[in-house]
Length: 212
Image (cartoon, rainbow, N blue to C red; front, side, top):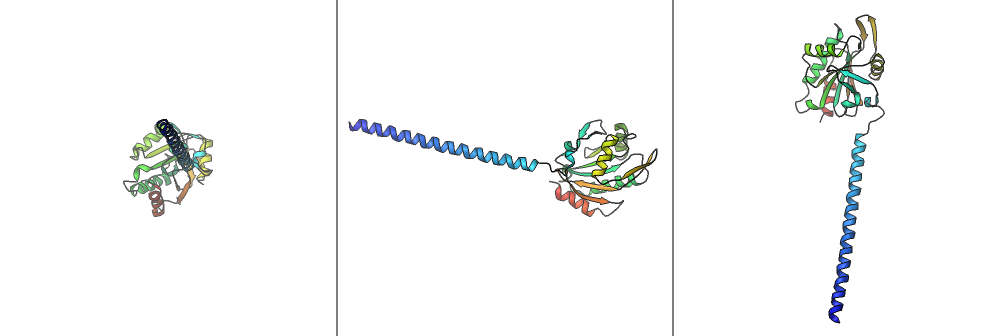
């Protein structure tokens, strides 16, 4: 009789032990699930785009390689951006030189996180073929140099976002603002420099601070 009691009690202990382990496993799984949900929430929060981001713009653009992109396709990189037109003989070559000067000052370990974007204010003339030839002429054929053209309406809208004013004054000439803008990885404007050949230390430091 005692023998059977011992077996019975042993079985109960085993049952309780299994139940406790199951409860512990359930708690562990629950904790892990909560942790993963929290982690995903943080990632999702970090990926959110603010109302001020250019990645909200629905406009489509064509690159010098003939690829169609949206601004949101540039997400994840620091952007140095300027509006020019390739037939410009006065201010635009100096803006191109300013962009090149900024790029030269970025440390090697930061260069891959930065893209330099030129948006044409003359999409009628600046076809993808013309943009590609312009990139070649200026020795800007690496992936970090991006040249874009859009519709007349999208170009005007984008200029407003960058606070760039431009006006066609002859069939081949435009008067325009000389502004280089810097955007963070979420597409939010964080810095602008205005003028030609101006001190770009603040612009360069902003890019270095943002780049990973």
